[in-house]
Length: 433
Image (cartoon, rainbow, N blue to C red; front, side, top):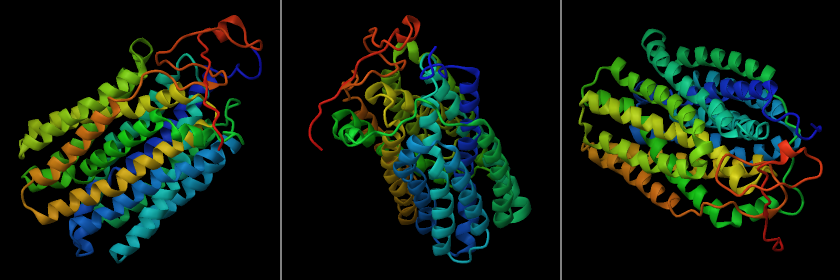
């Protein structure tokens, strides 16, 4: 093997995937605990659900949106410096949030601290994992994405118990300590990949963003995030309002986390046979079905459990497959920046989704209005993604393959026959930029 390819699919590569899983898992898990905090925070600040939910929406917008900038830095410098800076800001944001006395202060402390802090390293870690794998890229992305499922599974019920025992302020301080430990472990395991490279002066990333494929994926990502984050912010609150006990309501998010682990590993394991693009479409089409059970639940716990299980399974698979789909369509060049731009589109959905659901809940006591809005967002996103072509965008640069469908050729004098098997050419429309 030569220096450019001997890092693919190695034990060290799997260590990077595990490190990314730990760091991102705790970041996602902590942010997804917001549904356990929203009621007590709203009461403490004497605020309604709409304004309080902006704390969550803003933090998730910045969390995803910062990837548009940090992804480019990761391509050039690797993920470790970003994890150091972002991890420190994330933990500091949690501690600062525990001292806020007005809701607007929460917008700054939690939104900027946790949102920007997590966003600095989250997208770069996902894209870095993709550059360490060829044969097992989809599965490795599933491992990296599994962390958020584990984080949700463990941290949401833990947070609910901590809030009842210690109050929401001390709970955030404890979560800051947990996050710091996880980030240190992640820092030990991750490293920069030899395949990681900037998009280059030829405007590669800008040309990617002009393609139909990118526009379709980014729109679908935004709509999915509107629905998903709207649901995550209020599933516990709405269940409690419908008569479900606080402990059982918090358990719903654990069901989401547990089933998302299964979705990530199951769908990525079969991606090589069925293709990541088609599986991504299936995962998004199935999400409105999950939300339908939420619409008709009306406090019936078994229907809420079905909703949570289906949502976790489908959204977990969607997140895990996304990195492989990006590599399939656009290659590895500038993948951090491309992934970051997709995260930014998800960020816009995350910004507006929770407040929409919160303000609709404030305006009406009819539960079907806010929950029905979530269903409509997810359905529209599924319809959009079904229109995407299932062939890679053609560039001119040979890229390592993904597990998605695509013609296989031999190409490169620098690789062995085994290494070049399956490489596809990508020829891009080199329009002026």
